[in-house]
Length: 257
Image (cartoon, rainbow, N blue to C red; front, top):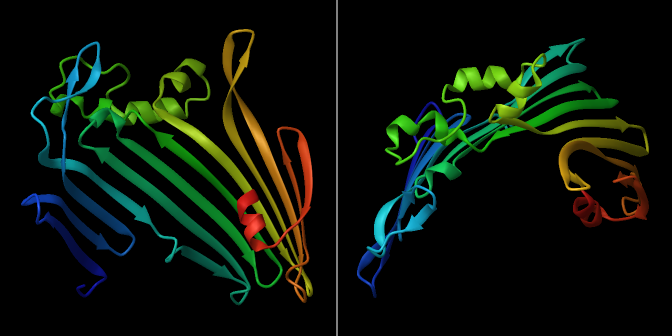
């Protein structure tokens, strides 16, 4: 570890019996930003037109297998305070860029921002969303030397614009950036009670008479807990139009979530 929140790491694994290196991993971080690069002793793949990724006949090799970058300011959120610090607006962002160096087309990107309004000892109100892109390889295919081009928009900025072009449904369908979930959470703090309300809306693939389409399906959870006796807790949950009522402990609630 170095000054200014800089950290560097390295992990190396050697198999004494086989007399070969099996894993080498490098990590680096600066405040909320981190990166990694990994090499592993494994069987590499070749991309074959019409067949996809096929294992090589050369056997195991010590090759790069993964690389990525992440941004997570969860431990250091951006806070804006008002009214003698009784009211705060908190912004968090979690983002991951992961490259599968064995199968480059399996690389992905996720982006999860959240904004929370906090009123001291009274209310927390949070809006968040999660978006993902599982076809980021097509933006870098000019450097990948693939035998056949990957379909879709190759300009990442144009594809990002398509994902938010609400005037053209076809653009949103073709874009690699997809909305995974929209979330809303409200926590109300009372003297002896804590009330928590959560709702999450996620797209799910539905089938109707051989036709497939995506529908946004909400999941609603309502929890009331009595502070003097924390084991007394009632959870009401609605999912797929089915309501359930349970009196649970903390572990059961985590399972429901």
